[in-house]
Length: 440
Image 1 (cartoon, rainbow, N blue to C red):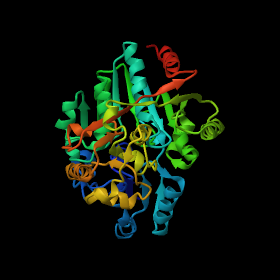
Image 2: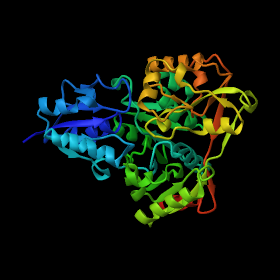
Image 3: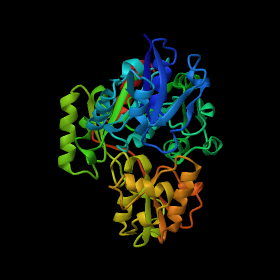
């Protein structure tokens, strides 16, 4: 009997799970995707060009709140949860919802969804979004390139536009971001790599993406999104945990999977976290993964033009996912503004449109403006919100320089941060051993 399936997602892991597990599987028919976490991804169609011959009309994408109705009206047998950075409580509430409406509930794991590369794969993952994964990925890429190796960075998907045009994307310059109409979230993750001279691949079909990247690479560097586990089977897996959210490394999915799978665990932000929380995180990871090597690391931050914000009224813009569903509430921009004794403006009175709705949804936010920009309209609303404020300057804690593509009516300063290991072993030590093991 063919089982009727709904895949719950957020325009990333859900599409990958479909492509590798369901697309050509005669035992299942995926009747719908649902969409959560992000705006403007419901109401689309997963196109037939990507869905394959079993789906000549493509697959509709509905809002997640319609799930009970979809299960009943489409006679759904199985609900497959396929997005990341959610608490164990959250995910089991969705399981209860699916089962109460008559469907089974599934989590697809690494064995069912990881693809194998012909090249060595180093994967960088995290326990939560905003843990320090991006500076860790950049650090790994620098080590590999210093050894004369060709590295392709493959980034977790963020296909929020026309999926037909995003099957395989290759970014080698900042201009490629403009050419692909990249959103702010994409720019946050791709731009720092591009400034280092790295080539970044992303898109929708990660089998095709991998085969293209292998053509120009000695090593594949998987740069994970949120706290998801890799799409590719890693030969070396690094997981970053965050003592500013101590305990989350055991209670958020699938970050808790990453902690248990890791060969190396980096305890980041030890320069800003309290000692007790650092100790708690180390104790937790040693208990569930005693074989992993543990590195402690700081993430020091600097600012390019401190004189523009010292003692001034400022509006602080932070990485969107980190301070929204990542639950952080602040980032490097806020810390730098506090350090320079700036007067930090509450952005909420000046928020418009979907930015205002973001504050209504994420009520823990008050002192920072999340750099949400999942499409042209939302990017304009972010621009308007910044320009509405009476700030004298904008502090950009985002990895992307939004002043390059938004028309901001105030001077902007950029806060930079990189990973800095403390003591030994270091990433260079571990990667050196790894390269000898794989013959590079």
